[in-house]
Length: 145
Image (tube, rainbow, N blue to C red; front, side, top):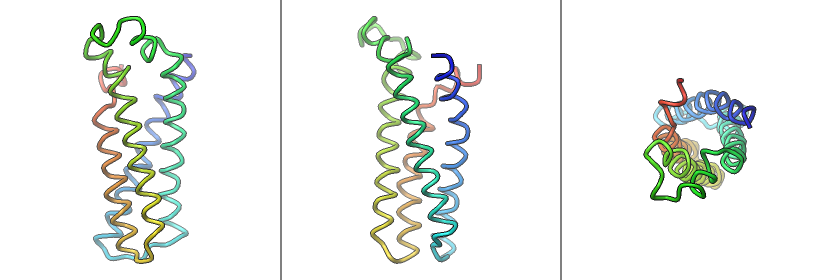
């Protein structure tokens, strides 16, 4: 279980960096009126999508084997969770699932457009919203300890 927790924690740095890179790339492409290229822009967005989904799978595995996930809810009940426990057992997984849904929607929608500005705009908005949600529910106090 400690291996899964460490994998989830350390991989989060990589996922956040790639997501930030994908959002910044899409914003620069959109605002700079650049052409959306398969070689660069598609790969950056796809890499962010894939890494985010792998991180979600590792996180879900951790949720079901960790004492801080589902077991905390089963043991203490929803009313028995304090704020840090509620963040780990409920808010972090729930919000991150929504964030990944937004990122996935952004990936799917961008493929429907032929125009570069619409592709970049879609990725900027959906990946950006997903990134903001992820950042809002990282257990920062536990992450840096």
